[in-house]
Length: 398
Image (tube, rainbow, N blue to C red; front, side, top):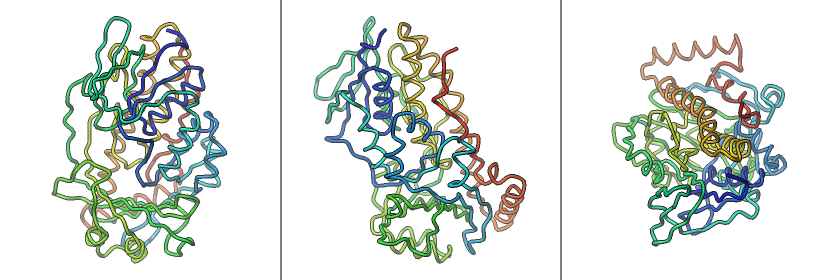
């Protein structure tokens, strides 16, 4: 194996372009195969936490992040009914010192766009639907719906939660519906409204929670509203809903939220499905990253961040073990599987914590948050300080 090896990447989302950018930085060329007719991302916000920002800075995107990002003052937990503050985790003023990088809110499409600037002379093929792969000797061959094939030394499955490559390697998985469904919306504003604070706000209520924050430099507010439901809801980011449905599910919540919901024009919803962590992501010359490897619930805001970390570690492992692909992929898994598994399981636990039912349970949880706040505001609330401390750019093969 050498820097001249042919690397195929299935999927041109955030994880796919991130690994192409990281490999390009380390002198390796890639070929991305994307099923869509062009690059594009869904209209949604994303919290780019310090652990991901450290990688993006290393890829040379620090100035781009400043241009597209919004720096929230804090991450604040609020009571669903009266807006009482339950916890406040300072971000803007402390993240660079505590974690070595800022905490940004960005539009997913903006993040994807700046990453594509870093893929250099990597080749990209659009409208290429991968239907499988096979391994022959020292090569792997990707197979496409149009009958074409592509021979490579390494194939990276970055094709998302419904990964064809994961299914090819390990068979059909059976995700379980969590009983949670999620509304999302982006609300544009010419001026920042008084009823949305410049923070990442977690509104915690009975059988649901809502997260709101600014993106696009403060020109839009992203809404993520999670509610328990007995109805099976499709696992698709693009399933349409309505403002009226969202308002009905959050009737009685604080006026600031209702006011914001009333401003929403386009509303989508998707069902939240859970999967157990995997013990391996690799077979031979094929490996996985991002949602294809470890789909996770959104309750720690780490889906894209984990894909970005994966991308850098995988590129580093390949660069540090240029003549031993098996060792490189083994070291990649050894570094990433324990971390992503913990994030998956802790995100699952947050779903239980956020969505208690009775008023007694709500009051008990809220008191616990306030006690944690007194002891250590950075370790309280969503308890994600350990997530932010990690630095994928420190990875080295022993």
